[in-house]
Length: 291
Image 1 (cartoon, rainbow, N blue to C red):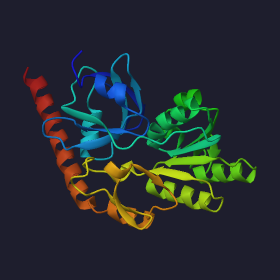
Image 2 (cartoon, rainbow, N blue to C red; image 1 turned 180 degrees about the vertical axis):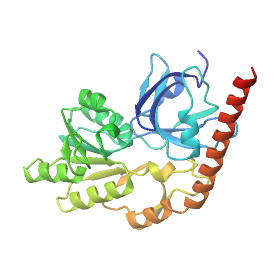
Image 3 (cartoon, helix red, strand yellow; image 1 turned 90 degrees about the horizontal axis):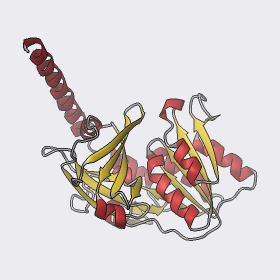
């Protein structure tokens, strides 16, 4: 089977898609928490994506993509049978997994794709694992079935109350803590504001808290410096020193400012992508009409 070939796609929600890709060497070596770098086509930028799952026997890895920018939206246009131009990995430091007791994995949005392999590895190591999944609305809840299979208990929250508990993941977490359910470790993965709120909550309980800062990565190999962050007062490069860090030591305010650094460039890229898409639609329509 050709390398980097997409063998399966599945739409998980609006602008969220699962891709299973042939990558035998990566499938054999990857560990929870690691990621890959890929280019969608020969003109595409390099983007990092966490390895959500892998099948060593089939020689495939699974990544989950949300269409937020021009490159990720172009990737969503790919289907089974298409080839990914470049793919390298596994990269980043694996999650440190050991038997601790109770582990709670808190995830928001597509962060659940990152939390899933960590939860599975924690369960395999002999831990009891609870999962809290949050989303804005029911249709944006992803991987519920998969997380249910990989954890001992699962809780769903939605901002609008359309599914599960109405509220934020921190509301559900606070309820568990108030009931005396104190984890030996907590992993939080999702938007920066969510991870910051979870870390602030667990700080007062002195709960070891790990956050994944993959959302700040750009190049993914340490060369561009775009993923600089401050952890415990020291500068780190998320892609090579992480992507996971102690949530109580991360400077989230600085990270928030850094995440906004390329908003203008991202806007220009999206405008160019939208314009190109419109041209492609017109060209296709013209071809049909003149056939």
